[in-house]
Image 1 (cartoon, rainbow, N blue to C red):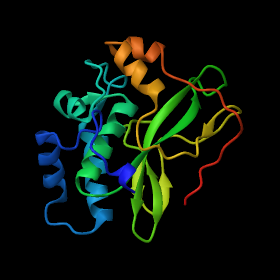
Image 2: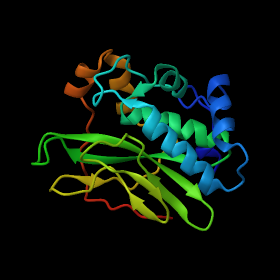
Image 3: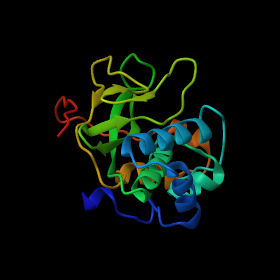
Image 4: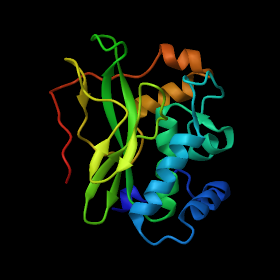
Length: 199
């Protein structure tokens, strides 16, 4: 599990402000499920999705997301991972491949997290931020994600990564405003049709 607990350049949970918030969200709690709930709901509701709210700057590192108060789904997942890892809760990164207009091509990746919870195992959570058409919740062991797989070519990618995918990092590093990121959302080709499986 050490891969899913590390502080890294991007998942910088050792940053003073990230550690401070993690302690606040875990204050008085021993149950990893309840700590996860607090962290998930805070990132979902208090960090604004860059495109939904037409906000800059483009953030990548967990500490940047916290400071700016905004991020794309990928960046929000980086902050959530940092907060959970700071409380010794193993957290990784998952991705969905989604149709941008729900009719097929073009496709893009959507970023979310998987957290390892006692007696439940790996559980996916999606803190992208809710709106009229999206209602992601934390209700283990049931998953209530932002998006469902609906059309040919979409997929729940099965891997749980210890670090964000390089293609994600590239896009969030290359572009400096939310419109350019939106026009260049990352995608990867499918080799086969995967399905998400808990370990």
